[in-house]
Length: 171
Image 1 (cartoon, rainbow, N blue to C red):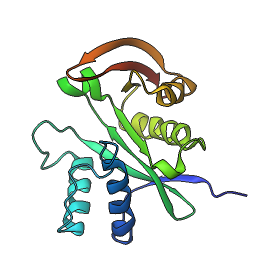
Image 2: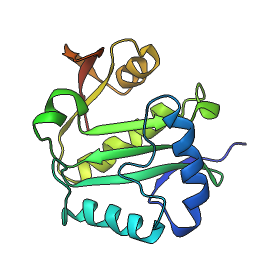
Image 3: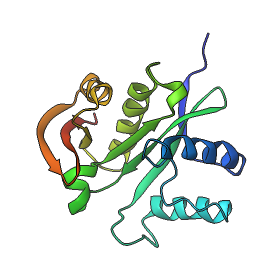
């Protein structure tokens, strides 16, 4: 039997594996650790706690809950659940962003992560979540649709693939 996927906050013990995940996804042009700094892990964890509480927000940021997807002690991915939308998030970022590490893809983890993220979004007052993906990311589009996502539209993004914008109920 495989271990269940659990979304949980980062801890002090996660530093090495989280940076390894960050480096893996950076090769694909994606961030695992949002606003991460290698020089002070405890400060980074405090930054995430502040962001969750909506205090000391960086410019352009909204309150957000950052969680890692843990399967049997291995970080297989991460999610960021934004509690509200600003102009940029309403256009292309959405309420929920997620990533699965390359070695852990095609195992259903993204679907589990998104489903659990929808519960988190609901807990902070989001009744329907905007979830986006690159137009050419078929796997992500299928994940969003499996979780009840209804395609609203596709929007152009300068120099990158268009974004698909889906609305997903959180109840």
